[in-house]
Image 1 (cartoon, rainbow, N blue to C red):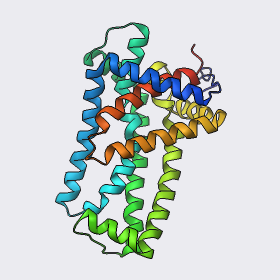
Image 2 (cartoon, rainbow, N blue to C red):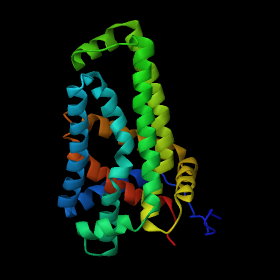
Image 3 (cartoon, helix red, strand yellow):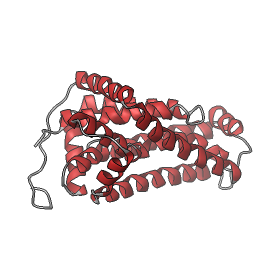
Amino acid sequence: MSISGKVDPVVRRVAATDIAEALVEGLRDFQALPFYGLCFGALYAAGGIAIMLCLTAFGMVYLVYPLAAGFALIGPFVAIGLYEVSRRRERGEPVSFGAIWSAVRARSEIGWMAFVTLFVFVIWMYQVRLLIALLLGLHASFSSLQEFMTVVLTTNEGLLFLGIGNAVGAVLSLILFSLTVVSFPLLLDREVDFVTAMVTSVRAVVTSPLPMITWAAVIVMLLIVSALPYFLGLIVTLPVLGHATWHLYRRLVVPV
């Protein structure tokens, strides 16, 4: 039983073929309703560009790389609207921004999940700054991203920073992925509390560890690669992954 007294959602095992099929269905949703996907993707990309410009303005351009890597962490939150688009298309219901907003606003527990997501993202950015201070110097500053990457790739301290940073990032990404891969779609689809949603999400990952870790790797790699060209690739990548996540959720959690 969940903390709200309701029966916990039932999780089922998935295979690699389910991941592939979810991606195909996600692409179909994007092709069927591209306008909504492009809008949410553009919003995500614009957020990344805005943060990058702020970092540049404050002389912290060296944080662009970790930002691009960590930006994938908040993808599940930004993709909420895409889940609703897929849900409505699945049910044959009309799709509009007003309907999407109403559906999301009606689920107050989504706000708590958004807090969890943003909290982990903040931890990610702070640990990057801490590692820079510890390994590259307390007052380390770089005039350009190229200078930062040169130090990281050509010095022992830089390589250590890269190794530890990526390891910590992988752990944080796996934790957040486990907590959110099912949580956001579930909260949108049913009346459950956010704790139950997170527990269900973790259960889904534990039940099908290899396929789910594969899915996590696909998401992270695609988002990072898409973020490198000034975040512009996210305009297309995010909607496809968002729609695909909804369809994978349908395979992971038994419908009521």
